[in-house]
Image (cartoon, rainbow, N blue to C red):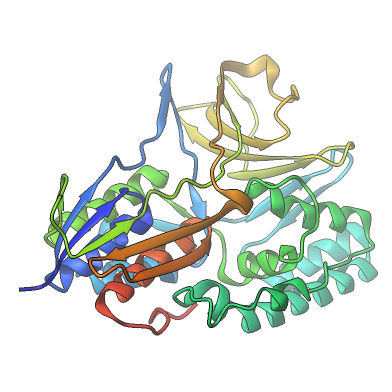
Length: 358
């Protein structure tokens, strides 16, 4: 009979690990509540409706007995971003560098387009060099060399509009707006692998993963006697969010808009349209502005979580003989799914990276 595994925390990493292990006939028990949308006065607010690297979840569902298309409707967003500068709007197409470069050239000139192209090529090179050690492998101090990351140069771009676009990537992960050593890597990932939306949002994605976990044989509850204990609580830092419900809004809103303010701050807006002229907006970053004020019928502050430092998640596995495994990943939907596979592989004694291709 296979080992008994107890997983504390029904996060996406915990759920995907549970399903994969249960599929291999481990006796898996998982505790904790799964993600639910916020409902206020007839409006529904989703905290994570979009993500990149869809291959992570295609692989998960296939390996646990379903095709993603059988349980969820996944569609690419287009445009992927709308950057609103007040005096200028730049639309980034999804999954097309050429279309983005054409848009930049049309709005900012040929030199700006060339500068962005060079920046993304640098981001691609760094992604190829770093993804195995920092994203896809079981974390171990024998492989981890912090000097490798520290030697990276912060990317530079001279065009003031593109500079602000690059700085906005930080706010999505809860950092202050600014350009970091990884900013151009994130820009490359989102451009190359696309921005995708799940119909029904994060609650639908989590619910489908939970159902696969149950179908594969895992149970929900507590377990005092186990061979493996997985801590998948993921107490990471999340920013404050402002939730706005709009009524009778006469304009069409893209799913994701980034407002770049004159003071250098940014506001990320995720919008969901339902019924006629009704929108639910989730705002991250700079929250105190009045762009939609005359249409607002719901205005609620959702407090963030002050978790571990640097917004990195360390997920630990403890075994009966005190051996410890760690998986390190940036907090995003894609990396949570990768972490779940790494957790399952560590229990099974598999040290190699996940099998899916990005």
